[in-house]
Length: 212
Figure (cartoon, rainbow, N blue to C red):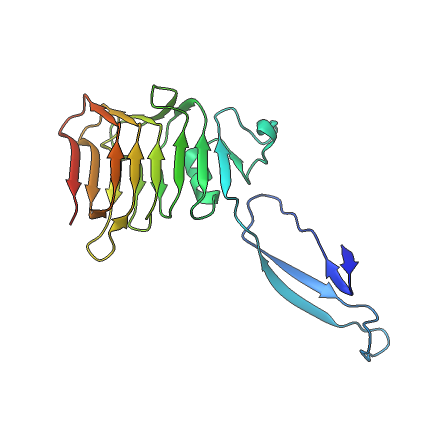
């Protein structure tokens, strides 16, 4: 802690990361023009919010004891896509490195999911059920780009609502294969952009779009 113009300036850290809020208990010593009882000091407790990172990086090679390409484990470095999505700020970017990610991803805010490429290099792989990437009605402006998605019920599920459609979503340069129900299902989507996606060897349908 340092002081500047009579104000205390502190740098806060947290373990584990990412934090949400910190409670700070401050004690003033010999404040100008403040009469105090000998042996007592004025105190104040404040709650300080931490800002989420605007960019995070995901790699299967990252770990708590690794270099992580200079990123901080648990803050802007993760080994699962979902943890990266959870940590990044609304409107932020999740960079996903080459690798095979055995998980489903749920998006409930605007994010840019930036895969390393759909040519099998950034692979999201399921077990025949669930969604590869699910975007709720809160995901306006989300971008999904550069993923190879396979072996889910739905590869990409965009779930807008009548009263709250998904606005301005972008889905480009993805490959969706081997999904049991369909490759991409999109309900109540307005002003969406879909381009350069390869959908093949899926059961049911390729692309089911309902604009509402």
